Amino acid sequence: MKKILCSVIAVASAASGLATFATAQARPLPGPDVQQIYQRLLPQIEKIPAFDHHAHPGFSDDPDVDAMAAPPDASEALRTRDDNPELIAAAKALFGYPYADLSAEHAKWLVAKKAELKKQHPGTAYFNMILDKINTESSVANRAMMPDYLDPKRFPWVFFADSFMWPFNNEREAARNPDEEVYIPLQEKMLHHWMQQENVAKLPRDLDGYLKFISQVLEDNRNKGGIAMKFEVAYFRPTTFGDPTRDQAADLYYRYVTGGIPSEKDYRTFQDYIFRYLVLEGGRLHLPVHIHTAVGIGDYFNLSQSNIMNLESVLRDPRYRSTTFVMIHGGYPLEREAIWLAAMKNVYMDSSFGELAQYPSAFKDTLEMWLETFPDKITFGTDCFPYNEILGAEESYWLGSESSRTALAAALAEMISENEITEARALELAHAYLHDNAVKLYGDRVH
Image: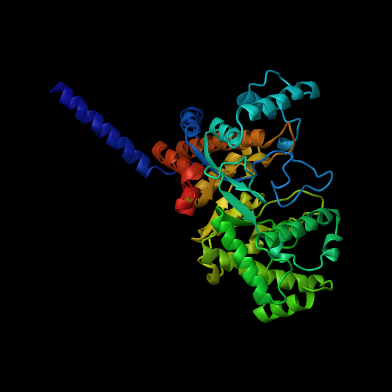
């Protein structure tokens, strides 16, 4: 009888606790328990296999990692500089680095170790090993072309689509500033690659033929395993897009495809039409549209003209309701405004780069705000990139993953302590952000 009575009291107390939590007002500040909650959550979050929604995997001497290149002497944020002491932690975790600094002499050990491991893990095995070390199930390969050293089962491909907007004489565009002098020729190179892929020796003489060529590239890339198309358009021009007619675009194409240098106004009008055509084709072909929406490298990147909110008129256009949009980098540093674009059913936010531009103490505030708003529309990414032999894709993978997981644990710990969610719900949100949201977006096209 005593045992039964104790059991009844225990159940009643538990029920009372749940009722208290359910009716408790969320607190404006976390309590003294937040550190303990964080310590409980982090080991569980570290065990979640991740789906990295945005990365640039590859080796530093691979010219096809990106459709662009950094302009000369481009400034690097603090955490992606060679002297970031966190890179020592990355080298130790990934390669057993034995030193406490990255001096030139000691860095030679790291370069040699990587070379040794590449020989021990030939072909696709090397980068598969890196993913295993950071507990990443799959990582999107946002690249110009896919190499044979990346396993397509673990590195689904996202290809670049900007080059279709640059089919004319680009002398004036390339001369705008030193950044464009680097960027524009690479877009021309990318367009020529697509032409070679489709056995097109010369661009069609009319717009109908050009649009057919574009669609064929998209379809072929999808058949080759491409899961989405990516725009870096903010590096080249404003992200405010007009809505010209097909006749306007056809006239401009006919005038300039065989020669002549279009005015900036004419070129922008034509590009507006092509961008919108690509967005529509993304819906038809079930190819999500990824758009770079954050700050960019170079001295002439115009943040005000590339403001993510400039895209609102496109994202909220009912003509594109069948197109899925992913806002790569979440509009950083305008991520607070950007999250409200995810109110649209077909708009998702990717958090990559935010965790490299900020330390976890700041990045957790971004994640907490997003988790409190549209937790089913946010996705994890590392934005890994092979900066050089020392800070390679390997180290930036580790840094992005570790920063995101620790910031996520901290954000969820505060939400629990502030009576916003339970610990069980926190782990559901962690799984969604690190893996489930992105995987659901692509369905059976990713593993």
